[in-house]
Image 1 (cartoon, rainbow, N blue to C red):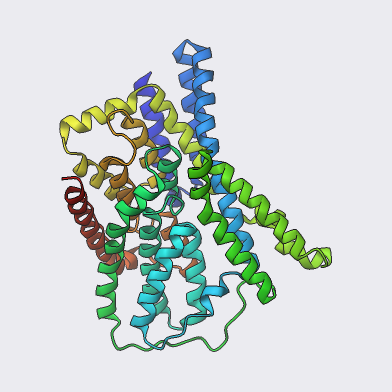
Image 2 (spheres, rainbow, N blue to C red; image 1 turned 90 degrees about the vertical axis):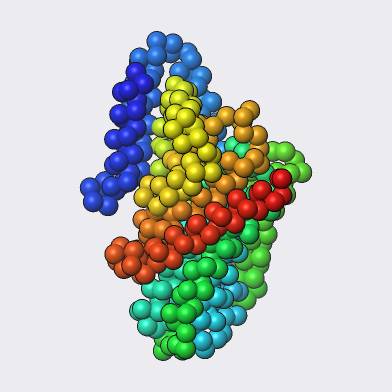
Amino acid sequence: MPASLVIIFVLAYAAIALEHPIKINKSASALMGAGLLWTVYAVMNGNHDLAVEQLNESLAATAQIVFFLIGAMTIVEVVDAHNGFEVITSRISTTKLTSLLWLVGFVTFFLSSVLDNLTTTIVMISMMRKLLDRKDDRLFFAGIIVVAANAGGAWSPIGDVTTTMLWIGGQISTLAIMKGVLVPSLINLIVPLLIISYVLRGKEVVAPEKVANGNGYETTLFERNLMFFLGIGILVMVPVFKTLTHLPPFMGILFGLGILWLAGDLAHRNKDDDEKEHLTLAHALMRIDMGSIVFFIGILLSVAVLEHTHILSALAAWLDRAVGRQDIIVTIIGLASAVVDNVPLVAASMGMYGMAANPPDSFLWEFMAYCAGTGGSILIIGSAAGVAAMGLERINFIWYVKRISGLALVGYFFGVLAYIIQYRLLHG
């Protein structure tokens, strides 16, 4: 049975990685993989009651992540529908490309830690279209936005789906991950910024002649500020909610979603239905990327089978014998995330290594959050942020390899060294 399960998982994984060449959506591959894996396991296991019990257990863990993502993505969509992100974009004014580059890099970095790297990338690249006219300039900025968004998401429990998975799973805590991974993530961003600044030195910002509204709808200043600050405030308060109540994060995000829904209904209660339709939470729920949500469900349930059959623990034991060093193993996992989606990589790692040998906030989990979160920047297909940028600015894969991949790789290894040195200094 283990051999057949591994073959099914590898085939599903290959289909996910080759989504664009084979033209089959990765969500379909993930769901097919999950369905086949659980079917084979249930039929060949012999103990049907045990299989159902384990499936229910895995479903509960997966649902927590899915509910959290649905809530967070909906909040961001509501803020965007109200043009709330203009609170940031309207305050950016500089004539030097290098100054704008650093500003955009750091805004993306910290915004990604509060929202998520995918949403932040979409928002920032959309903003660049309003600020930059030259295609070459926008491509460079798109590249640094991908690096900054992934780096910013790695050190925050709500900034990247893989860090969120580790946080919800209990492998990391809010303050520890922020203290442990912030400096390496900053270095991961600053090194590419320094190099690109040298390339773009002396160039002036060439702005487009006309600046269009983000989504075509007009909102008042009060509505923009209300939804922006309330939405961001809710996202920031989720870790606080978890700390105070000890309830799972998804409960905090759903509670906050209810507050935002109430505030929106009260703010628009005097408008006609047609006028406020695009501003409602119901409309935002239709706009979230359900394909990604379904993909997470499929891949997490697929990995759960390998965990229940002890295949992952056997793989971890083999890696320990073959490589022997956790820092090298996790660094390799981070590099692999440039080619393969980091969600299944982290999900597999969570099943490979037990909490008894690797307690919460230990070296393995914090280093995993950094490597898996930032390694995807090395190739444009390695992260959701990169794929989004590729679609929005029509970035050529080879162009990214030539201009950005080397910078992201250098930043990645500088961050790796920074984390290892920092950990040894703080932990003797």
